[in-house]
Length: 298
Image (cartoon, rainbow, N blue to C red; front, side):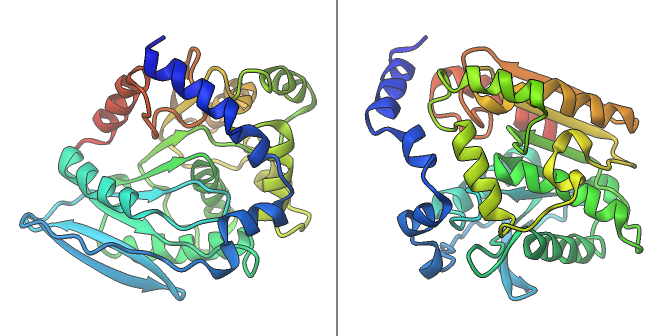
């Protein structure tokens, strides 16, 4: 383990991040000032790209398109448990990813709690995806998600499959640490991982999930990634940190996707933290980030 990673783990214990994230959802909304949050979309400029902000269902979507037209798109769904909008540095990262992968990128600033819940986000993402299908073939569209963003991407697949319009499924999914409710045996394993996860905990999972759901009773396919409806899914890259609680559901989520005919690459990073591949804070995570880039390249 690198010195930086050792220091990072110690810092997360001192702050401590895990304890903070385990607060009741109302307290987290106060901490992140969710109710007063507004999208902070930086002004980006690059001679090789056309950059604009469009609106879908009253929510902004940052669009980054190659001036030399690309026929491929990636939709980046950031995590944060519906507590915060993408940060300016994440918008800048999207521009960098567009350069590295050759894809156009869409960064949605989907609605937050407390005035919205998971259904509102899925409605917005559905309408955005439908709009993107006017420009790109579904096989050329990828979704990239981290943490709750990865969860939302999988929820969207179920949402599409159950909708009467039967939109085609996007060609690729890169999902870093999607989390949802756990089966009983998985819960037991996750409780053990509370000791090694420096960011999340089973208490945080319960609180954040209930907050995103607006305390509504969700159907099984939105509560459990292991019970999603994934018809038409073709190509999925799943990653989990070996030290995080969500890795307890890694195998069952992968098997559920495979049961619908999807080709699934499952990567569990030994000793790694929540969403490490999409959030390479230390040298140990950078190879996984680069594999992500290679997966999304056209």
